Length: 131
Image (cartoon, rainbow, N blue to C red; front, side, top):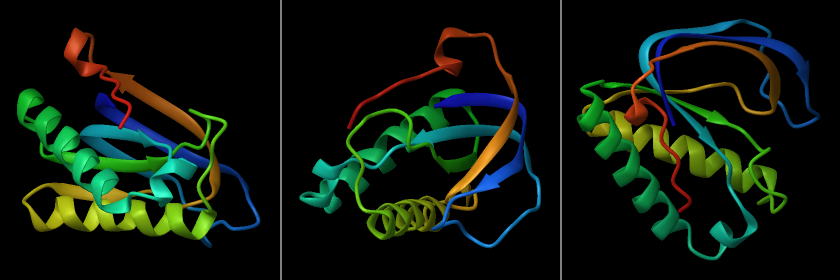
């Protein structure tokens, strides 16, 4: 997770399973969650969703930032969950965050993007947790 003063994702290429979009995505003062759903998450979706939610909510409070952008980033592991499962889990995570007071957004799924990030410099502005 990265605490960004500013971020922009510009679509580069679309995967076969991509959401239908070609619009750039921008956000200011947000926690960027680079999320990778693994095969093992299929066996424990409730646990995965709960732990991801708690980690994001914790960092949001710690950084005093209520903006959250969830971005599917299937480059963090070689173990990939099925595409439909991954998409659904990340959408559920965004909805849960939104329903609990955060301004959560999910980027279009399956889009390879050019990333422009301005990440804050403090150590807690860059946080990794494997769930």
